[in-house]
Image (cartoon, one colour):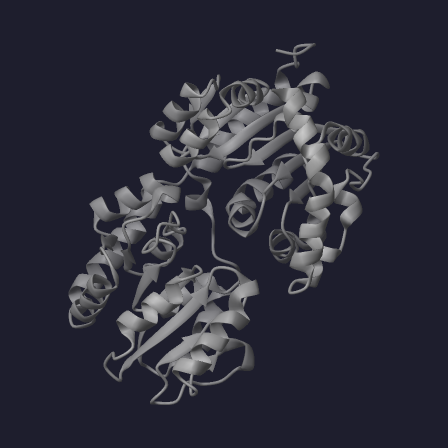
Amino acid sequence: MRALYSLAWLLALPWAFLYLLWRGRRQPAYLRHWGERLGFAPRVRARPVIWIHAVSVGETRAAAPLVRALLRRYPDHVVLLTHATPTGRATGHELFADSVLHAYLPYDFAPLVALFLRRVRPELGLVMETEIWPALFRACQRRDIHVLLVNARLSERSARGYRRFAGLTRGALRDLHAIAAQGEADAVRLQALGARDVAVTGNVKFDVTPPADTVAKTDALRRLFTGRFVFLCASTREGEEVLLLDALWDLPADVLLVLVPRHPQRFETVAELLRHRDPHYARRSTGQMPAADTRVFLGDSMGEMAAYYAAAQLCYVGGSLLPLGGQNMIEAAAAGCPALLGPHTWNFQDAAEQAVARGAARRVADGAALRAALLQLRQDPAARQGMAAAGLAFTAANRGATERILALVDAARARPAPPGTT
């Protein structure tokens, strides 16, 4: 199975770079740093390296409390943060600037992985969430480099996919030193796939704090919104904007619909959609202040989601009306913003169920139900205040995952790696 996996990567590599060229038409950042994708990571020789992999934006933001805690606890180490996407890398620069090194993780082909490890020589590796790379994990295991899968989550849908390659998955999971799972259900699914040394540590996204400039950005947004009732549609995914506009087009005049797409490469696509629907829409990137008759405001900016949540009276958390798995509703709860969720939240299943059970969020089945819930809550400030308070209590009760993961890191550094392979 491993031989077939390696052969598949060897055959796929030319297509991988064609994919980068294709993505580079709209995102030129995909055309940069190709050497890193082949294993030519920055060399570090003066200090030991702790390496953290966060594939894209969500994982990078989730890693923030862990990165900062590692920098405090191990000031004599260099932290290398790797990504797979330009937006993840840009988020890493935004959050940490030059306090960490930044690079792309190479493709999971044994010679590229070996070059990466020779250049970086990490003392320890942390891989965020559900990134399972058989060649990388085996190479680390053979070099006595402890790798931990942290903040790990595994939906039943993802588990079914991994079961199709059970032998490869089992070997990769057993090459890990330890796994820190978000919840009990995640731990059970990972163990069923062959994982050992699985601890339930909670979700580090509860430990994420807003950026320092969030208050100033929130005030700026509130000035733009001029006292209107703001219904935020946060982290919307492809296909959702049409659904939302169809359901929410004819809202009362005092309601401003704020759309913030999940992926920045879709900003112009959504802008074009709005131009056909409402030539008078406003957008954040131009600094436009919505007029009294403006129906929709496009939040086409990066790094302001916490401010959008703080400035809104109510929100819908994207990716959940369509079968896309849902986006992170913890941000909304932490900002005290009442949230509406669609039926599809398997990416954050435990958090979503807890949020609904505690009264911080409500479920809606479709666009019509979303509209009805919006109109009902618009007229019920006491209900919104109750949901906001429940959200703050919900996030406070779930903090602490970062410290529990740090305990696993301390134990991994203290325990010599066994020689050989599993």
